[in-house]
Length: 248
Image 1 (cartoon, rainbow, N blue to C red):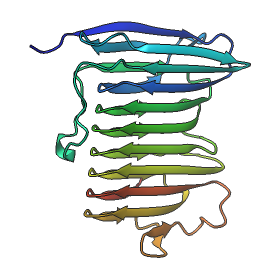
Image 2: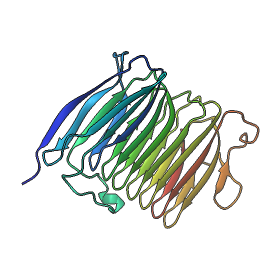
Image 3: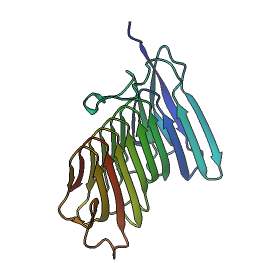
Image 4: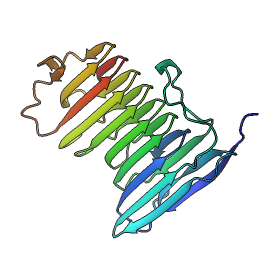
């Protein structure tokens, strides 16, 4: 008999904090992170599901001056994670989901992990300083905010597909890394953004937007990169899937 799914609400007050560090581990379940609307006094809200064979997730909230730290972690139990799936089957682990909304006005350092589920981070309109997203079996999809500054991003899947959409109007030096063990990897770069790209695949095909000139075997660069003060450095790689750098 399949495990039944239970759920509980999440509500974390901001308590006057001006910056945040958020660390979320959804176990084998799927995780979606998005923008919190209309609740200026909250850091986070949402719904956390779990299988009936699992204990409730653990949560810890700590404040240090103007910084608030939130850690959420699913308890062990329920479905076992599938440590490797072919990319065409990498649809995610357990039959439960976490939906979490973060305060868009508070600059956040975000870590998101799953042992086998899909990760979806729609960070459009949010203030983000760092993003790390990793799953052992599902897909990773990250939408970055416009006008980010000196943003550091890493997204990784053991077997699934990875896609990162870079926001427009980024300032400073930004770093984006996308990696999959077996799935396809795609990074979308706004038109007019200066970028250097290192793109590799062990068994798949590498396709890079023609506005980036190839300067060595795996490195591509926009003509204005060296002189640009606002730019992004991209590393994209897959062990077996295709790697695509898309202009948009």
